[in-house]
Picture 1: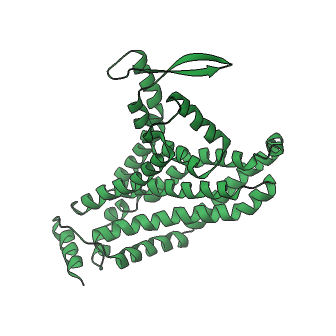
Picture 2: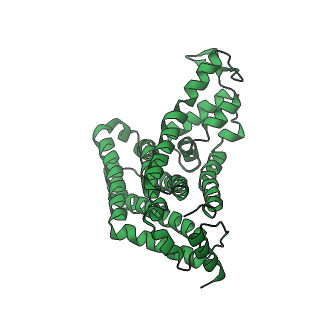
Picture 3: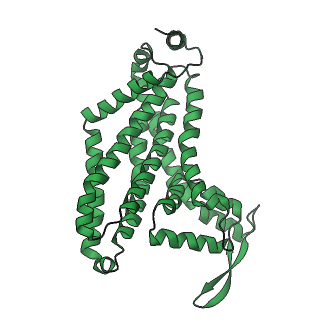
Length: 324
């Protein structure tokens, strides 16, 4: 047994706080077991089948109700547009449920002490759990998308592989971001009840509170409260130029920090979906023809990566110091 492992075991027994190193083989072992448990419990295959049905269901609806769309050859565009809006809601729910008991469940049952008596440091366990749960979600997305591809292509009659793969790639990164948030929160709580409340709070934060920020900021701006001074810009409506007001730049920066909003914007990097591109053009018009850096596609990608790295970094630092 290594020195790090012995130190970690001592910290579990005594409740002390010591730092632990990262052993990649140990991380791989924890991640492998976590993934294998998901396969044995049929969770992985269930999620794969769910994503398959989701894509086939959307495609079937487009093929049945969207004859005009099909005639215009825009079926893949519509599929990506509709699927991105649905996955924007569904993927966080799945990721939060996957991460809910990842660490908190082990602490509540006491099995984490058994795990840490093996050659695993706390950091190994945390990283391994994150990789394992991320693999379950990511690979189930891949399997679901790949299995659905043939059905999608057959039903739509036209199929843009680049847009389809682009949606898959961004969905995976989006899912890993929420998994990182979930596993990190789970590591900071000692019971599944508290962890569950934390997951619900995160969903409430991003899908109720954060989505209402634009309206709240607009209301405050109308009443000239605090720093909510509006900015005027010119737009063309039915051939006539009009002066329109928008929120200050910093308000849009805060709104765009939402992982779901960043996911929506980053799709313009990898797809040519008309509705997404049109929204980007409207946003450019609001800012005089050029978006500020914090609303550009590449920065939205950085925001998604930050939601993976920052919660994990906080959890790695804090998990070493909690009393198990």
